[in-house]
Length: 446
Image (cartoon, rainbow, N blue to C red):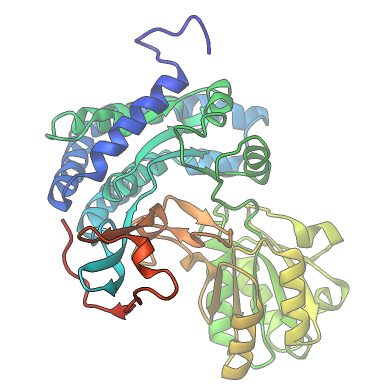
């Protein structure tokens, strides 16, 4: 640790220790207290709106120059803006989380091992979560709200492009928490530098989970640099497959929305797979709708013959997350070929099929190995807010603990509580007593 660190600028280990203490405090809070904390956060953000937006404008001014110089992508710049509807959505998200059921203290198993010996499996918080994210400053508020409702402390690291905005947001959140009895401002903290992130990744004693939100390079670098469990996804290479039994209206609506609603999002469509039998009638209609929406189409030779102004695709296009109005189009001969392509080239994030054939839809949904698989619906629905989770701390393509948009249920684990009256395990050795193992009605636990 740096010898220059002072109480004013605490070391990362000190931040983590404080987070652990705050997490233990949060674990004992009632639902009412946590909701009061969230209400305080929402009110304080509204009160300090102009201060926060002033910081955001300063960040945008710096980044606009970087975009013009070519050192920052336009996609990242778009994610930075917090004005207007984004700020309103951020505030609404805090209220939505407050209204969600408390995920902590839920009994998921109740078994009577013997008379007077009852076992309960009960949901509990993870503890301390480190979240590393890029650009979108509203993510700091979403994550903080979810962490508070699930009784977890969180250490945030945002991108340098939003440094002023993130500092302003976390400062306001901490101020709000400091006004609520029983809640420590240390429940939400911020680190700012890459060096601090490197230090944080070594603190497996104090931090229970790392969630990286950002580029493939970011996620992989985090996974390779820590012993702390990592929850997240790398690329967002999502596909829409137009089956031979696709409805034209639905195909256009789903494909255009999946590509253009927010091209810079990780759940935007990057590859359009089209059944060979629909190249002649449906693909030209799709192509015209996509072109009208300003999409550049990169197609294989067979598909390009049915499209105006398509660019010849190269193999790398089908493994690329464009994060822009660019779409790779590929012809497939069958449903099976579409599924094989997605499983081989996709990122296991979210993929969709457009078809009127229920059997084909079920084949796709059961065999595509992704966190989200949709039928006749845009991939853009892969989102915690749209799923009714209130918000999301990130999206995971992991196959352990949580998968897909990670909301409150992904931020809790469980513990086993056993209530006895002097019972000894030796009394149940072979030839001694026997267990009942009877399912019992869960009761409200203290």
